[in-house]
Length: 182
Image 1 (cartoon, rainbow, N blue to C red):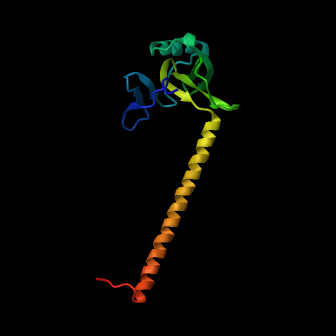
Image 2: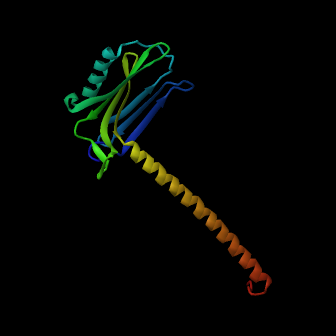
Image 3: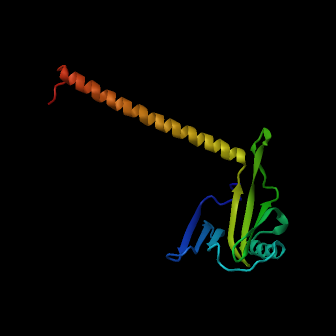
């Protein structure tokens, strides 16, 4: 996955003031586009293509990004009806890129290199190249982050109590004449 998915990226964003329309582009360090999104209003007009007519548009875009479709499997496709257009999402998985989350437990879930394209109306509206992580990984990460937050809050509380105790000891010793201030 480290060799297949860019970890470090440059990101750029263009907006139209007081409008929802926005462009976001992510570039890998090698200059290749690894993600792009064109956000538009849900009510924006566009074609109402069938999923069968939208798929060749997405496939042509994926090929133009340098991907070989014979090395990809279409794993998901969905359609969302908007007010004045149809949007479609296609997700491919790179063959042979599957990674088991837990080596000793095949039921632990798998991750894989994926490519996704959104066709909004009759044009490509989003593209992303990413590593799909298994749900078990996300749950383990969530538990670890929760435990880390709990430890951080607990250590802050303990530090606060120690500062209060140090101040109390200082005041008590000062009243007893044990501390001589210079």
